[in-house]
Length: 69
Image (cartoon, rainbow, N blue to C red; front, side, top):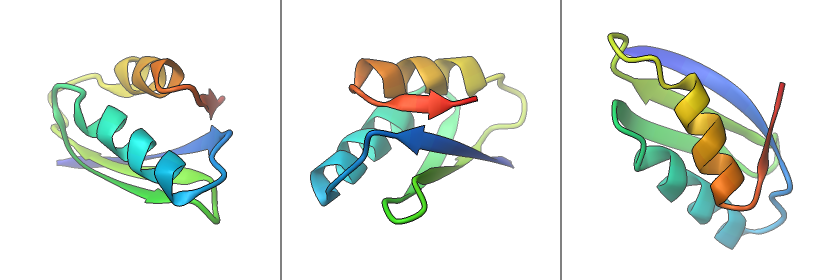
């Protein structure tokens, strides 16, 4: 397993946090996502045999938020 921390813009409440977590965890290869509303980040644990970064960005975008590059 590998970990990736991504910065996310646009979250303002617990509902946002939940929506982002569910979107990221739906990505194939993602084991777990821990979202920090205060820090504006997601710490993602994923199968290191998968390249999930682009899929995570797309999932967050589709949920209505933005990954900061």
